[in-house]
Every structure is written in structure tokens, then in C-alpha cells.
Image (cartoon, rainbow, N blue to C red; front, side, top):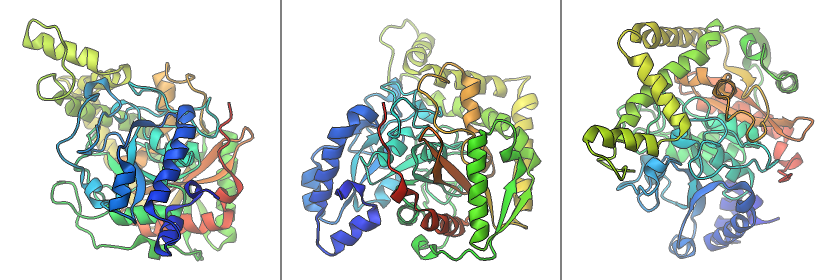
Length: 474
């Protein structure tokens, strides 16, 4: 077995026994990148002098970083022409926290994290390792594809409305969106500040718990960071879920959910029942309005956040202009791609005079309802079980010209971000075409330990990674 096929906890074990060195791991992964990157195209930037760095840090584990997380030694482009050559003067807090890691490279994404397929990158599309005619999901598609293709052992992504979980589902890996405030957002280039959260994308649940150990914790540089006790999430992992109460919200199993996906998730529910969990159907009616609510709030915040890219302070600047207004207009026109422009326009519209009350204010009221309904459900259930995505990965080019159809890819994930809850996606099966199906576990605020335990129990029973591997079909 090649080193790139091992999980991080397996690599750590070999490092501790001095069976391998960090140089061996780096060389193995660089060879893998050389073999597979031409098919997957997961990277925007590949790190330099990695062998030299591994010599200085013999126990370091390599990692991939989504390209909207600031790194002072590598460009942070957000996969946008607007930041094509931007190098941050500082590291994001999560980068400082993974100090015992070597950054293999920065990973491709939908521009400014706006998309569900990684087709909206300004540089190139990323392809799904299971079938390179399919999308890897988005916006953290580069992160999920790189982990699935064994080009990085683990990666960091960001999740605004499902951007860790949906690509994890499409690529057959594990993706965790932590509770809002558990992981510092300092150094994450903002898309929608009240929704964004950095989280792990890994090969298995144990690695997910390990990476969360590194990145979780209070950060005074982030005003939304929450003070919590330091935890070792790996200690929560166990097979014993007897008596666990799992709710199945019926709204997640209705119209628009692919029958094969629905059947697979219901089989997961039966598996949990056989393991001693209590399964009940429940309802969260506010979820019916969650997608519209999410896009109003997210676009409004994007309109505000992306206003800083004006051609003056940093980033792309238009070459020809006759006035300051023309500089602003041309810079934004030339620097932003079509999806970013679409969301900025929509966000500006819902925040404008005469429409603020009709759209943005109403969306915030629905957000409160969603939070209240989840709070009520968690008085009765420990976790909720849903599909991660209504479908498996779709063909490249089939939705990129139809924004509304693309937005529907987030229908199972956006409520979690609206309410600031934690959720994890775990692969459970393949559909008849050989593409991965993922299921989602949703927990109450700061119940990552319970989510990881529940996910781990299923993973140990099903052993998805042992049965299935990406085939790079063409």
C-alpha cells in the first residue's frame, strides 16, 4: 500500500514508530500529484521547497488549504482574477494552529466561495476523481477532490451554505461544518460573515476529529469566536450509540430528492436502528423557506463584503479609466466573474431602499424561525439524519448556465448555516453509476463530539473506504 492511501492517524503511527519520515510522505504525495493533477486539477498553487521544509520538521504531515484562507507564504486568490496575485501579509488563525503541518498547496474553489460545482473558478474547473466528467461539488471542490484523489491526506475548506459537506458527499469523503464560532474565521476571506465557517475535509472520521483538535478554540482576533473548553475530539469516538435518538425531518425526504439517494439514506437509518439507536420521523416546516432565506442573507452580506475590492487598496486594478467612478466600475466588471456579479447585484438589490423590508428583513425573521424549530427538535432528538445533497455529482456543464438549478444543490445544507449548527457528511454507498452518496448528521450547538461519535459508529460498521475507491473514469 502506498503512503498516500493511508489516513493521517495511520501516517502518524508510522512516524511515531520511525518506520517513515515526513520526507517520505512529502515525496509520495508529490509523486501522486504529478500523476493525477492533470486529470483532477484540484490545485491553484502547489507549495515550493517542501522537501527542505520536511527536513526541518521530521514529524510534519502535509495538508491542502482552500484558496480563500490566508497564507503569507503562498498566494490567496479565492480563485478570482480580482486576487490573482494577492499574497496575504499574515496567516489565518487556523494556519497558525496547524503549525506541525506542511502546506502542499492552495486548492481550487468557486470564485469567492460562490458556487456548488467548482466550475466558477476564474482559473480552471476541478473534476471529480470518481468520474472526471462529473463535478466535485463546491465551493470547496478542490479540497474534496484532492482528498478523494489521495493528492493530500486531509484539507481545510469553508462552508457558507454546504460548501464543505456537499463536495465531501460528491467525492466520497468526510466533511464537517463546525458550530459557528467554534473555529476562528480570522484570515478567511469573507463571503457571508454570519454564515461562513472553516472546517475539515478528511478520509475518515478519526482524521476529522484530529484536525478539529488543531483548529477549534477561541480566538480574540475574531469577534464571533466563542470561548469553549479545549477538547480532544478523538476521545469521543466509539461504536456505542445504543439509545441515541435520531430524527428524520420529513422535509428533507420529499420532492426533489433523488429516489436512489433517499433509499440509501433510509438504509442508513435502518443500520443505526440495528445498532441500538431510536429512529423517528419529525418535521421542520421552516426548512421549506430556508433556501430563499439563505440566498437573500448570503447575497446581501456578499454585496457588503466584496465592496472592498475597488481597485485601490489591493487586488486587481483596471488599466484604463478617466475618473474614480470609472475605476471602480471597470475594476469590478473586469475582476469579478459572472456568478460573483450575479450575487453582488442580488445582494445590493435586497439591501436597497424600498426592498430591504420586503426581502432582507423578512429573511432575518425566517432565520429566527429556523433557529427556533431546530432548538425545539433538539429537546427531543440527539441528532438529525438527512441526505447531504438531493443528488449525486452531476455532469460538468449541465447546471453552470442555470443558476436556479445550481442553487437547488444546497437545499439540504443551508439550514445548518442559517442556524449556526454543526453538521457532518459521511459517505454511505454508491449509486448505480458508481458515484458516492453521502448522508448528513446535524447536531445542536457545540455537540461536535456527539456528531463525530455517531458518524464513527456508522463508518466502522459500513467500512466505505475499504469497499470503494475512486476510479478516475473518463
